[in-house]
Length: 174
Image (cartoon, rainbow, N blue to C red):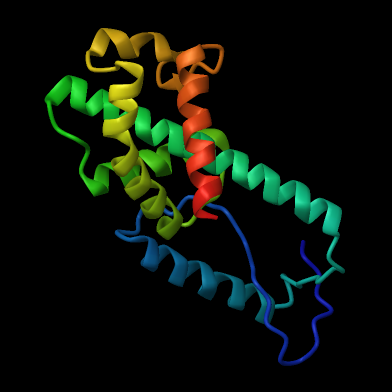
């Protein structure tokens, strides 16, 4: 249960995570989620608490978020490389966004769809250069980058190199 002591007119944000598989779009799911929260608040089941900001915790969360963004970007770049090696074409934007959603779910990360689209666009820009730099033009050169199916193997020097390129790219754009 959440509790609230917000003052009138104060903006608050409610973050909740639950599967809404019956919705066609994220907008429909978000709309339902907002209605759900308002209904629970009206019934007195859901209250909201606003705590004083913990700057040290916020700083750790920001660093963690930066790390997760770099990992997601690395994953999307490698997904682009796999698509090119298998089909001779780069991933379409909708496939990049879906790949980002799948990665977030598998890794417990929370990025909204706009952030996933932005990272997908950066991945599309970076993939050709990464392919050339690391010589990852064939499917068999990509297999060693993975462990346990589609999880990137960060023990691989190549994965670590791609991740570093992604981290630096994100730092430059920040």
